[in-house]
Image (cartoon, rainbow, N blue to C red; front, side, top):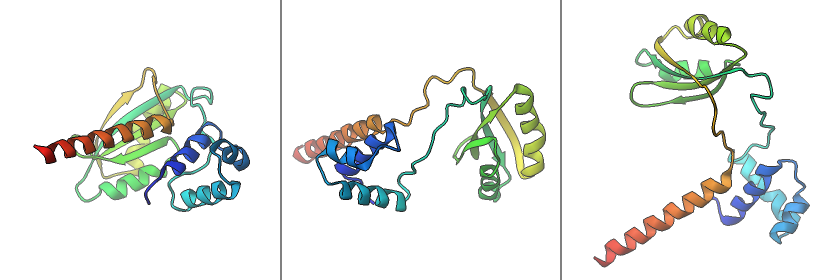
Length: 171
């Protein structure tokens, strides 16, 4: 599904307050409330947005955040990643190319808990893991859910691509 400018404006309006009344968004955008309601429903049905609470980990008692690079036995990456995605300490799971097969972000209440997670829980729950490399984050400088920046940068890149294609056609 391709996002249009109205979809992007609705997402931006909801990122500040996901509970914002549709009538307020409609008024600000100069369109009917029913349009906002149907667009949000379509965005949710297509799994492009989820309206949810996003907690601040530091305010919620998280003392330790870590990024863990994981290698798994060939043929087991998808199954291992799916298992990792079910663990409560794991906040992000992605498969990758290169030195790691899987990259995860974990949150813990202490360094001791992070150590127990890496040394005991991971091998027990995911026996196909062959190695891990853990990076404990000292400070999080940015953790953004700001779609304004993304949409603006994406549009600038698309314009640059169009300009480049147009100049290649002239040369």
